[in-house]
Image 1 (cartoon, rainbow over the protein chains, first blue to last red):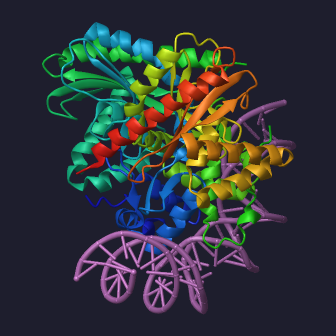
Image 2: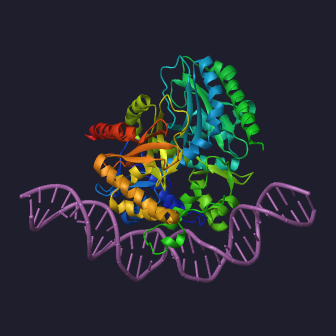
Length: 269
Length: 269
DNA sequence: ACAAGCCATTTCGCATTGTGGAATATGATT
DNA sequence: AATCATATTCCACAATGCGAAATGGCTTGT
């Protein structure tokens, strides 16, 4: 339960560029999870592993700015309107969704698979859209849910879509988090990078879960609007590796191309 | 265009409790609007009115933490996965929506009005849910859009739902923002407070827009889960003041009661 | 109702840390 | 290749956030 946040402050000690107070304040917002209700100062201090007075000041600031609601009676905080407002803006900026949605649904219907669009959040991919075909029984992933960056086709496609300079530190973090699987992780990631160079998509055959097969493709939006990734997956008995290589993968790539040109058009003035 | 952020730093100079760096960092996230694409460091500096080196450090920090995406080629930033993740959590915590939705829709259908649920963001009410009846032609407000706190029934209902101690500073801000309408604003707010003490709802007769009538009711969730507000409104020729007082207003109050008990139930362990 | 205990907040000196002007590095454009 | 515009680094400065301990406010138990 006591999930400490991922980066100890001392790792940043020599980074004169990093604004600690900002990072800590955002950590306070992050420790609010979907499943739990309002949190007290104490619980926040415990979860962030920060001293109580520091938490007091951060929660005070966040409350002033409307990112936290404070209930004086109970002494508990909940996420405030400011966070909602930011979230709505972030969603509105996701033009991708509107454009990609119909294409994704089409593929999902045709293949009876599940087609998702994700953005990265730390070492996870965050689903921002998901279309399901008819045949899908298992595999319920709703917008807002997460899958791991390193061991899913979508995540590795995202990694492959990055420039070396952005990818390297992420891989460092991954290896630090899963030191035991170092060799196999590196191998899988490098294979995905090669696959995507060659064919535009990578495979996930039982990587995320043993009984789930899928493909992933990076989706780099024009005009610096960010990097996303598509996936297409389903139960292993429905999606054979061969089908993925010959059908689903290439179809994913087609979708990325259509989306990119479609959004590129709109960017023109 | 050059919309400076609302609180000059010097107003906080004597507030030893306020964490400036955190506030500034969040201001950087806030200046991203739904309509504009990725922004460069320069544009961010201009909009926040902060010196460039400060912006560099803040954007660096936010990028490190995944709240901003950086496109090295174009030198522009866009809101990143971290903001999305926060937004999804904030939305998931909005159990209110799920509970209130059917009740709101029912009222909207019966009355041919528009029934909204909002949370406060600074000096605005932010729609988090909106149900429209059949007859509604005008009045398109989608989730994520805003209406002013001081001059809308929903906003004044929210104000009336606050404790004095939280309300006072908000009213200060409002009056500072609209110094010319000071007297009428105070009068309207005080009337709303009295109305809500007496009947549980307040009126908005052509306040927000001249041709729109409506009612508002505060919705204080149990267990410190925050304060929200409902409204019910429509074109003035459809919703007469008398109907609002006798039908729509009381119906809004019923909804708030049902929602509160329904959520209160679930809170029990 | 009263007292006791428990949290949360505040106080304070200290030193970490963010600040901003000027200079430099970067990189895009002609 | 040179120039321009932009972003980053440098540095001294001091503002400001830090944490141990004390105060204050609140609920809980009798």
